[in-house]
Length: 93
Figure 1 (cartoon, rainbow, N blue to C red):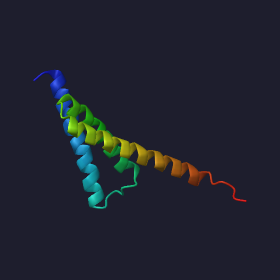
Figure 2: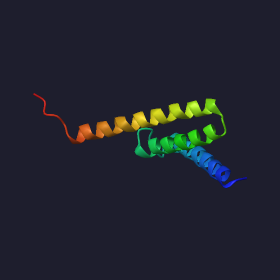
Figure 3: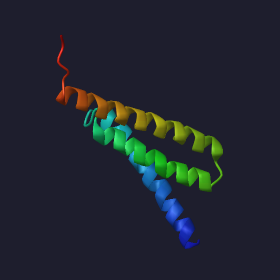
Figure 4: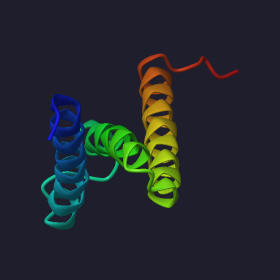
């Protein structure tokens, strides 16, 4: 096994661990689905799995993980916007 293959395999396992950790922690109510930790675990896990599945030419899985990352980015953006809005409330007339 080449160094690149070892790195890719490690990335794949780390991605799987991150996504499973997010799911398990949420399922056991250790973190909430709208928490930063949950979204970051899903984002990094999805990115790592994109790298791995693309390298393995498992393109159906790559597409699923791209969608997974888009959902995580969207949720993170919504969280950031919501936090900015709550810290800077507009003056209502």
